Image (cartoon, rainbow, N blue to C red; front, side, top):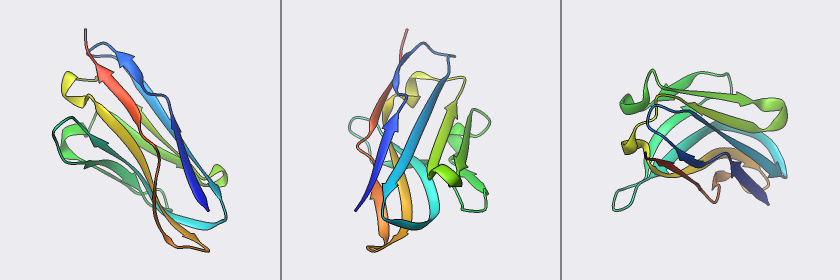
Length: 118
């Protein structure tokens, strides 16, 4: 069984910064892509950023230049450094990983709330 555990959400003022962390655990042979998605109230879940096993990142246009995704493959972990936060970044952020294990597939974390407000 594979589990993803996120941490680092919270309340921040506009223009501030937060760092999200996600660690995968369980019977993992390998992890291909790891990424972050978010879902705001009344909206669809959307991709924020993801990073390949080789470290190649992709970002949603709305966060380019403000967010940075990174991973530590030795720790099966992924991070999202968020800067210049805006109220429209407010959402529940979910970690996602494409895992090669006894049961291959895409796994999700439980979500962490990020609120950007003055």
